[in-house]
Image (tube, rainbow, N blue to C red; front, side):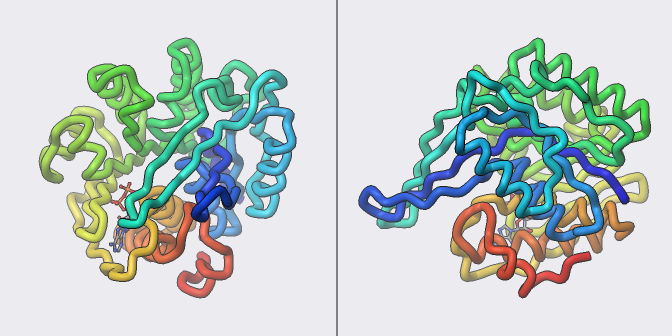
Amino acid sequence: MKKVVIFGECMVELVSKGGNDMIKSFAGDTYNTAVYLKRSAPNVSVSYLTAIGEDFLSNELLFAMGDEQINTDQVYRCSKRNLGLYMVRTDKQGERTFAYWRDNSAATQTLNVMTQPPQQIDMFYFSGISVAILDDVQREKLFDLIAELKHQGCEIVFDPNYRPRLWPDKEVAQAWMDRCYSVADIAFPGGDDHLALYGHTDADDVFGHLAPMRIGETVMKNGAVGVRIKNAQGQFIVPVEKVNDVVDTTAAGDAFNGGYLAARISGKGVTESASYGAKVAGTVIQHPGAIIPVEALKKAVNSL
Ligand code: ADP
């Protein structure tokens, strides 16, 4: 059985239903990817590496992971901290506003409380958010862990998921993102992320910037425009079937990554994997929220 470890933070999500009513669930970029990877490839072992609290919400998250068949062997407990939380409000025009309480979350301490680092795994996935929430000492511990995993032959996968509010300024973010890219075997740059972070306006800018990082497989997402892939064989363009009745684009990129990696780790080629990832993402954006009902995904996309 192939083994994947996904590192990051899962938060409590509260979505306003109008007035003071809220719907509670659990989400976060890397967690969303873990869920869609596991749902797409049930035969792959997916562990989520994070830290949670000892409160009842943290316990509920563990149960949610169990429901998704995600291994919790890499979930650590932090006695003095809780889960991060965010709230989403949608106004009458459909515009969403987010408020976050995550600065002191348990997940910000993951590398400090980790006692049994993952070993002998096939794939390690992390994002710019996973890095942004750590202090510099823990970032170094993360890069030590990645170096050790690479040494063992593990594939390293990175998505920048740039969130300006999590970084002191663009220069600092660029420096860390470039360092992350330079250890990646597979990377998922997004068109919007690269425009905001580096001012790149097209795929050539993005691939040009990433060339010195020698990433084996670069998969550039660009909404409904399509996916561009670059690897040792050359460049490929994979069209995406445009979804017209988009309900909520939350987690589109995360879902794509989960589907793409599920297909790759199941032995599919890059273009077939991109089409599969696009199918997963295209389904997710037709439903509200980051994590859509299991049945809704099953109805639209066969698992691998
Ligand atoms: P991110 O969420 O990282 O910004 P994108 O907006 O590029 O990512 O979307 C990720 C993936 O979701 C795309 O590669 C595509 O497969 C799918 N997607 C996004 N928007 C649409 C759309 N309108 N129609 C069909 N697929 C879409």
